[in-house]
Amino acid sequence: MTQSIVRGFAYIICGGKPISISNRSFIILGKARIANIPLSVWIMMLCIIVFGIILARTKFGRSVYAIGGSMDAARLAGLNSKRIITICYIMMGILCSIGGIIFAARMNSGQPAANVNLEFDAITAVILGGVSFVGGVGDMGGTILGIILIQAFNTGLTMVNVPTFWQYVAKGGLLLFALTTDYIRKQRREKELLEASMKNL
Picture 1 (cartoon, helix red, strand yellow):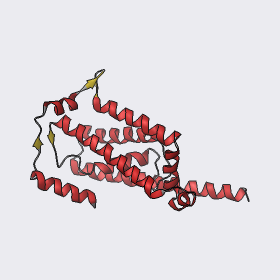
Picture 2 (cartoon, one colour):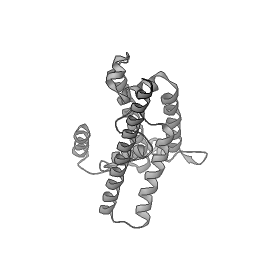
Picture 3 (cartoon, one colour):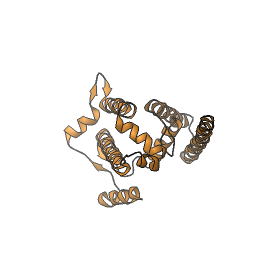
């Protein structure tokens, strides 16, 4: 809902047209390269490393998994669920803003209609990478694999000249497949946990 409201305001502010950027320093940011690799790739790799360590090695990361697994159980264990979720939203907002800045710098303009529905690709990628839609399961390695898979899928559709509207159908089908596999994995995990608890009785 908030996304639609903010996107609507973006269209209203710019009249639905791209706004060119003439600031050379800003444009250089989009074209900058280190060791002949775009700055955006370095930022992505840094984020993958940092958040991979946070999720795997820190108390905060374990708390995120716990809340994703069961918010009630996490609350009963003494975790401040609302505070941790708020921090996650803040970090997500910061990362999205960085992505928007880099994208605008690479395009030399503000594009209000760019990357519409890209969030569905993101959801599909992480679920394909093993992240549970309901939370509590997943890691950064699987997420990277999911990103590679969805990018290969999208590139393949373009290379074989699949019409744009059929690409939406194919992406929707892939998302449905990812959600179905996630549901199956969830049912399997619950069955394994139930069997393990029965053995301990």
